[in-house]
Length: 75
Image 1 (spheres, rainbow, N blue to C red):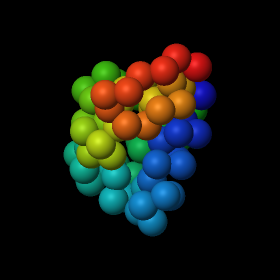
Image 2: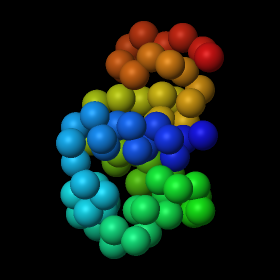
Image 3: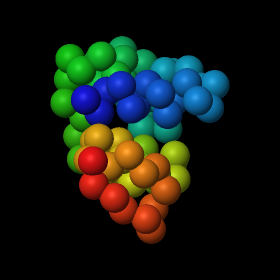
Image 4: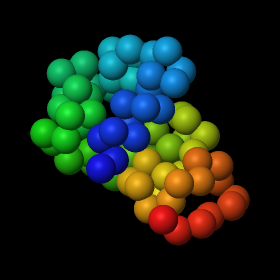
């Protein structure tokens, strides 16, 4: 359920969907579809978001509960 992690990461930083859409170079509508799970997020966007948030793709994808890179524990 990566879409919930996307929303949590964004809201924890008090950002709007439009803010993240601008980072990715897409519309707010497309980003909203990622967060609601209506559209699969492309790998390039997943990588950009991991870099932007300073976390790992595994964390965003729910494969680990450790948000910090370097210390990986599986779920």
